[in-house]
Image (cartoon, rainbow, N blue to C red):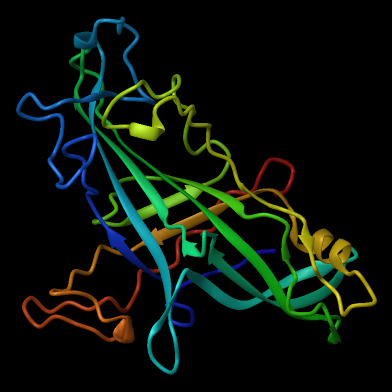
Length: 302
């Protein structure tokens, strides 16, 4: 299953909260830039010089900050569906060779009825430690969970009733990494595929800046796993195995291109996601960025 989300036909919006509060650490009420003017740093979790030791002065130190994004889709009759990332037709293959088409719906998962946002974690190297010639890095990890549903299935042109509750048995875990320069406010390209980004050198250390992230061992990048489907059928026939065979599986490569943050004061009217603009300087959220290049396929699937 190969899909494109975005472009002129299916713009994908996100409501971004950048630079989440981090001060004071126990109960943050404001954001303060870190790793400058003697403010605390964290070790770069992905890159350290060979000469680094347990002495913090020898290590790459980085500023760390967080952002939060809620996907949203503008509705034709006004307003926005917060949490809806995309609803669009997709092409698949049934029984190895028979063409199939369905409507794919992607939503951010919910916890206690509330939309669970995507979380972005950014590390920006500020010191080279014991190796003054070592390159500095800026790394972003974006995590989230997506609920996947299918409807309106046709196989070889024949409608197949899979009902209205055909969805994955659990949310799909998302972990994206920057492919080049990226910040939540500045935009750029993110991806999830083999070889894009290494695992962290170890678990994140205990730090007030990390909070609940302390101890997290960040895995190397790979494609996204689409879980099996359930609830697919018309009451008498369980078609979940058929849908699972067409749409589920591991290591599905992903690339995402985000435009720069569009800022509007005193706030963004969700009734005007695609049309709201600012006159000075002239700025609008649309048109969106060009679609990114197709990500590399896993070994053996080329």
